[in-house]
Image: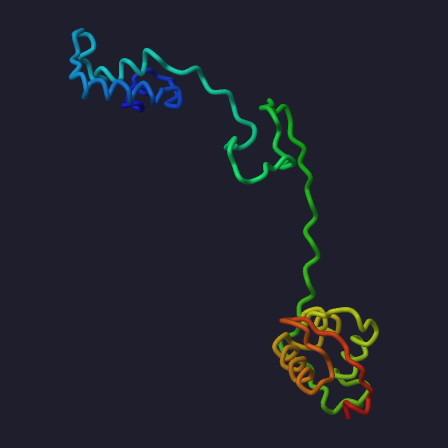
Length: 189
């Protein structure tokens, strides 16, 4: 009935219809068996629609920020600094900052380089362990290590780091976090 009443007056926002008026009129019709006495009220809207239109609320002000339910008896502390304005404001302009996209990570190869026939100091294991030893307190992610050298796939990198963690060459401190342990080239021979 509220929407029908608002649609009967072109340009009327349904938010202006008072729910309380509609509810009380409907209740009165049921309790008091109120009947329409004026033949002009016998139109499509009925008594409820006419009373809604007679008591339209003023137009709502425009909202600039989201609604906030304020409960005076809340057990939770209120959030004071949430970034919302205290009162509604008219927006007069916008500032737009265009951000450059972040550099994409370097593409890793599709196939890892086979270094089994390479000289011992040039093998991947020695190069990675030397990289981890440069900063023993740093936690490395497998993707960062693979991107640093650029000659290994992620799948091979995960396999090798897991194997080296099992043998004690590196510490695996969590999912995807590796750090150096004390090692010497004789361990890796």
